[in-house]
Each structure stands twice: as C-alpha cells, then as structure tokens.
Length: 215
Image (cartoon, rainbow, N blue to C red; front, side, top):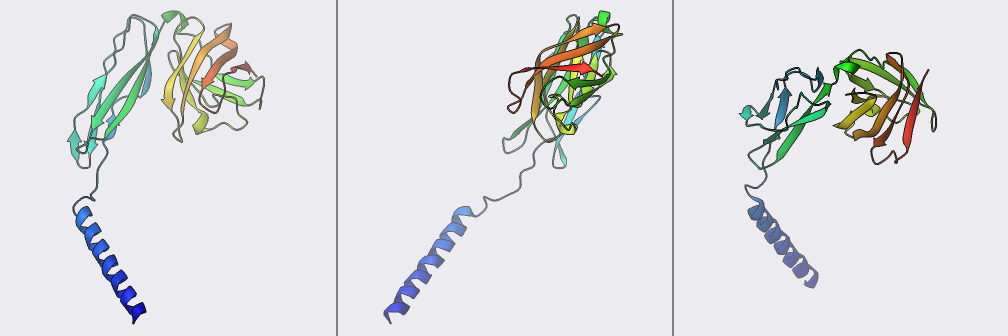
C-alpha cells in the first residue's frame, strides 16, 4: 500500500507539472519569418572615377509581405576606393537582417590592367589561385589563402582601385565564412602582374603576408 501511495502522489505531481507547463507556454510558440532580400543589379561592381553611380536598390519580403528596407553608406565616385552599401530589414518580431553591396571606384590609369591568370603561392601548401577579371578593376580569386584545394569557400572578390593597390572588403563566401584582405598589392609586368601579395583576414589564416607568383 505504501508503494502505491507514493506512485499516486508522483502521478498527481507529474500531471500538475504538465498542466502548469502547458498553461505557461500556451500561445507562445509561433513561426517568425526573417526578411529575405532581392537585390537589383550586381552585388559587386565597379565604376571609373568621375562616372555616376545609381544604387539599384533592394526589396525585402517577410513571408508573403513586403517589408521596409533601410540603407546606409554612400559611394564617392571622385575618390578611388571600395565602398559598401548596407541594407537592413527588421521583421515583426524585432529580428534584423542585413546584406551588402560593394562598389569599386577605379582610377582610369588602371582601367586597362588585366591581372587574370594563374598564380601559385610561394610557401605553405603552394596552392594555385585562378584570378578572373570581372569588370574594370574588379576581379575574383578562387584561392584567397593559397590552400591546397581551392573552391567556392575560398573565392573572394577584390579590386585594383589605383596604382598597384588591391582591396578585398569583408565579404561572406560560400559556406558562411567571412574573408577580407589587407596590404594587397601586385608587381606590374606590362599591363598585368608577375605576382601579387596580401594578408588574409580570417581566424584560420594567421597574419602572414601571402605571395602568389604567376605560372
């Protein structure tokens, strides 16, 4: 009888706890939709110094509804550099999502430079990087750090804005990591380069200057 009494008391306690939890959480669980952006134009682009730039803009939706987008950042087309425009949208539950547009303003003196080609890192894994010219002063490199096997997760956009300066702004790559470069430059060879160097800014890459030699 004592055993049954303990079981009965425990059963009542469990039922009471369940009913209490059900009451406390009633109406709390629901679905939230994060804003989804649709960007007009290209995320990465370039213009020459003195040319005009008009922001194509973005739209954002929350579920099936359009939501407001706020924009920050400007592009100074009189000064070479890489400019970032940030778009933000906040859903009904207060969660904010952002996305960026990158615009390189390019000195006309480097407009005809073409750094396209394959380059091998001169240390470490001796990985090969393929550089492709996308637009005026605008490139991609598929092996930012010179690892053994390049791919979408190591591919960045960068700009030759003036002289031999290379700029790769912070950007999210395939897989979600964020990369940027510092102290980027190249050694001219005609209208191309014999090599380029930069420091990769990413927690897994250290602070060494990495040099890539044309092959």
